[in-house]
Image (tube, rainbow, N blue to C red; front, side, top):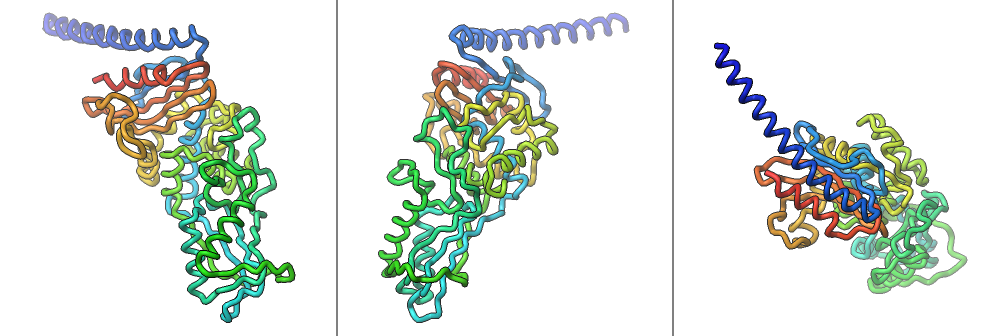
Length: 389
């Protein structure tokens, strides 16, 4: 019996020694990768965890908070989905005095409330509905009520971020406040020009009589797609405009209030302090944001086990080799094994998401690099993790 126990103990100790050596080998490989980056002036926070057990596999400075760029959206969108619910919608009200005689005798007023997906196709459908009511002329003008948000059109913490990536945020905004792919600075002008053309194309004349009254009656309500579809567009296409509209709307028209709601959510739900959710916007455009790999993975694991909104959240992420882009890496082994949110700013690259190993196990990971890194620097560690079995 003693001989048998000794044999079992010997096997157990030997097995743990092999496991220990394997973990040390893994960590030494990651350490070499991180050390080489830091020698080039690149700060690193990186880590990978088993999704089921939460077991920490390996990492480097996984609790260090760095500038996360667009992986911030992974934080803001989970809070939005969980708090507001995937089926929630946003209503834009359209007012005008119309008695059925073909003419709206007042201005037409569009009361914005933060719908981030007012695109030309939906506006065309809206005008068709007005035409179906018998409207052929508008005595007054097109007026845009932007009172649902405060007058701060740009987040003050976007100082130092390229202006060609920072959108104007106003509650009635169309086509993501872009014209020909370029961001505009005058949301009202873009809305007026675009809507005037749509009205005219549908045979409705806008007379622009300045004596026309402010309307007292509602003509119709334009309802947004459900939040789950909005979040999918945000995360798959990294749409800064859309997420900032939703965050500001959640804060009743003010950025600080919206950000506080995100931080309060994580403090209550996941016991993550404001210091761990150190963000000042919802998109990651600000270089004042700070997140760690460990914080990002804490959120990813919570979403994974969240039956209520987890499926919508996970499906909103980019799929390597799937949607919205074809395989971006020359590595077919990664196809459909990686669901992720990426981020990029000058001197910042980041990636967080879920990775399926070759044996079918799922792991959650996050990597943030601050400094003069390359795309290859980021993907070296992802491909290394993907090759694990």
